[in-house]
Image (tube, rainbow, N blue to C red; front, side, top):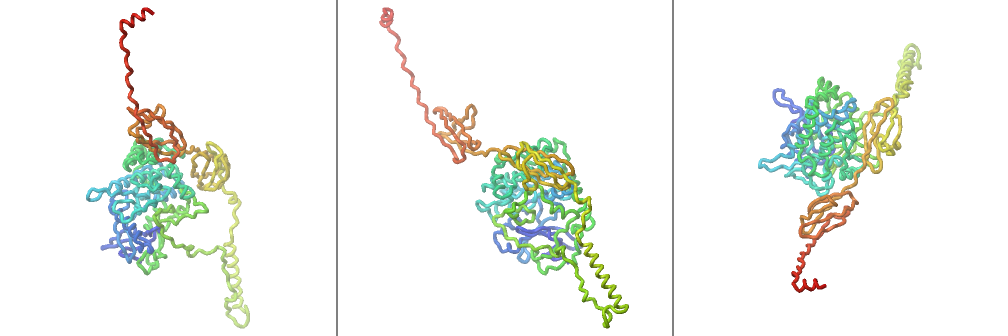
Length: 622
């Protein structure tokens, strides 16, 4: 029988790390009732930590209210032998990150219309969460705060589901983020989120825009070699047009992506529904087929072998019968080291080991943080629990070990002398056969000499250029020279090409290496100069401010300019003297205040009295 956890049978471990463990489970009932679901537990050492218990309770309470086709549904929140758990619906599918990897491994590319379908459906779930109200009509104020490819799941039936509201912000939470603490993945945060400012639903729209950008371009938007550099990129939020990175993109998507990624939250889509409608309108105008049925058919192509295996063996994918599984001897899932992990369909193991094109490798000085239940880009909490070290895989032995036969252990049937008579000859034959077998085994186990045609695998002659030239070129994170640059690489694999040039934004592109010559040109965009904002005030207020002939606003207002820029601003207000002020956008001052002086009243000049007759007479005499 499979190990049990309360009233559930645990079939296999799906994932683990971070705060909890995730299991595929089965619930049985009367008359042969059986239902597959997922059990998410809190790690044992966290079940005594009030803060993490409250975070887990918050996740359960928030998701219980989110009844929507694009959000994963919870069924139950309870505790078994001191271990807290959430029972959730079982979704047959993969998250967007794994889907992208599996498609790449299969030689496929996720079509642009299907990318828009995934993001549109995810926006539908977000919009529902953002606008949810309680029984009294008060908004819950839910903000997911962790939208990323790992938390958007696509089912084999073409459905799209948001998962993991573990760090969501909402009214009535038992835990609250401390000032300056960041929750979420740095490379999918909004500028206001990394600045520690108060966030609302528009931070989720920004994160969803990042996912859309990366799916369309196959390039990480903000991810850098270190967290500090990643946060700096998010703060600056310099966004090249997607079509400049991937020229094959259809027109019309640049505007949608850039609006979702506007650094100013007031200029973004003001609701997830607005972003969803923009994507749906584009699909209709371009007449692109992107229904859930089309998405399901694409997943059937990507996961053909896995689905065929599941059709024969069920979701266990041919794992041992439950009777052969070791009994854990305890009810707490984290104490079950022998519980089997999810079995992989043919090709799936390779998919898991394939470097995700979105991920930059960690620098040698910065080891990657332990992965959570949804992938290597770990969600940041206020505290990260320590992870137990994992040993090597059981049963793995060095390939250099050799079998040794001890000839002294071979017993003879005669005690009168060694190898005498027929029995002795049998022993000699047996010993000789054993030695021959050992020698043949060693011959088979020794490294095979490669065939002549295997010595020179197919090569791709790669010619790398940048516009403008002179950029530092890297392949899979390792610098190889400056552009233009030529290199030969083994064909039939994916590589990540990068280029950096001072004064320009770095660019990366994932490239499939085909045999033969291949030319790649990477266009570089000039780095946008940093912008600073200055609050312009006057006493009295409502003065018109102009920059030359251009009116820039009325006081008080925020004036945005390139850092270091100097402008002469003119202040005008009826009844007051015009004032000119030289302003430098240094970023050191938060505001500029000027005082206007009233204009003096002009006195009428005295009128001369009309000339008299005597005066006229004097003039005539002269």
